[in-house]
Image (tube, rainbow, N blue to C red; front, side):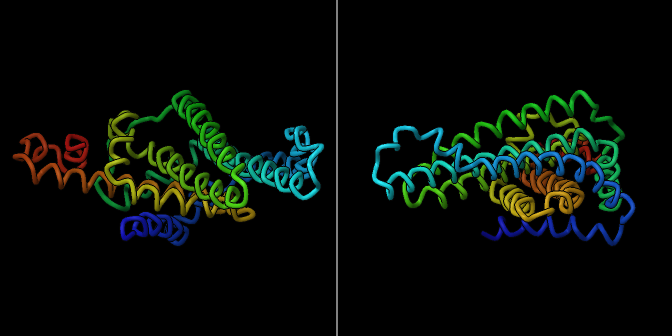
Amino acid sequence: MREFLHGAALLGRGFSFWRRRPGAMALGLLPAAIVGALLLTGLIALAVNLPALAASVTPFAEGWPGLWAGVIRIAAGTAMLGGALVIVAVSFTAATLVVGEPFYERIWRAVEREAGDPPQDSTYGFWRGVGDAVALVARGVGVALLAGLTGLVPVVGGALGAIVGVTLTGWLLADELSSRALSARGIPGPQRRRLLRAHRARALGFGVATQLCFLVPLGAVASMPAAVAGSTLLARSLLAENSTAAAGHRPVDPRVERDGPGRSARIGS
């Protein structure tokens, strides 16, 4: 639980950058607002048509007694809404990071410079961002299906599906948001995920806190710059612990002493 709360606190530290870098953080609101408005429109349309959609996917309940037909359709509607929220969260993050790449690069680089020992200049790249965004949405669809199926469980399905959806979406958000800072250090995707799994509770704490902020009305727009800043701190904290653990189990590589702690984090990972 301590590690989980540590991860959540990193998002809070991301919000503190509004005091220190207000200009860069404010610019990060623009792409989030554009993407958020488009996705919110789709979500409202879904909510308006949800009763009809729930009835259309449960035709087998037409001849059931009114109470049981209502229960199964409420469960189906809840499952559909929960799955939609998962897809919206990951789609929002993926699209916003692609659209606002120049703005968010300014934020995470400012965090790196302030924290000290920033990575060498490297360009994340538009098409690389698009590829990561597509992969994130695809993984999000899988999570949405799982959360939706869980939501069909009578009585407890709604709450259980929400927990599954928030937890797994939080993991995806932690992975995607931290990818910029880790990729800048030459760490590929599979190795990034191994690093996150080695500190699963901390990554989940950050991701779940971010997802809960995204669920608040307009929270996704307001939280996105802080999520980028906090994820940079998350990546640095994971690399620092990984480097320390590696140093405690083997002799120090002379290249580490020569190239400094940023290089040490990459070799240790």
